[in-house]
Image (cartoon, rainbow, N blue to C red; front, side):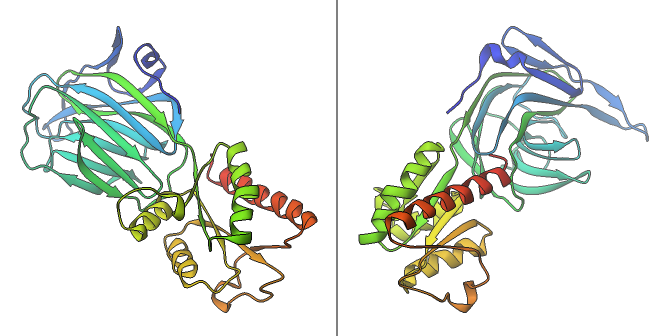
Length: 315
């Protein structure tokens, strides 16, 4: 878990717009510009910070000059910045809806989620927070979730920043970033050899790689277990599924993981199953031998697969 705030807000670079730093704040000095057709337009500003994030939380305070949002006025957090024509922005908007999450791609804004019809804030300074996971973004305003935006694209470990569009001054402060460890979710039958592989091979690998490991039988919440499983699959960076026995629950969960495009590592005990079902026979599978020498080879292969997937996801 990593944080930076306060004095570390000096680690930034402006890409466009008029910004200045004062103590522990970044100030955008908005301006009224004249468009090509003579119409009034607000100044646009972009700032990038040094840290990159793939999953976790980003939050800051935004202070406007008044509670009334001007039409076209925007202020928010940049995520998944790939270039100036490809990034996600989440925050406050003076356009049709007050709180929005959108994706700039090929020079055009694509809406991801928005709410709030009244173009007025309850107070001049508000706190926004973005919760980032592999399947969705959540926008919270003063601790209240206002938008949940499903992700149609795969996030990369990319810089965060500020996006602002205004004719007047807007102040940003108290930037805080919390990075989240990658998650691995295990789908398997419970008991016997499956518990042994989980505890003696998969768990030690995840501990060494600083990966948050989950299995459905270890969940302690009060929600229905299927809801916990679906959520764990959606938020996991990697899925490991042992398809040795004909367990309908395993194949149901595996099908869902494949359907939403998750990175899946398949396992199979060669002594108990020599031939895979046709629908999954085309997927790469780690076949293991439940012996001491087989365990060492299995551990090496699983470790290698996990490292490759994390590298592909730029983690």
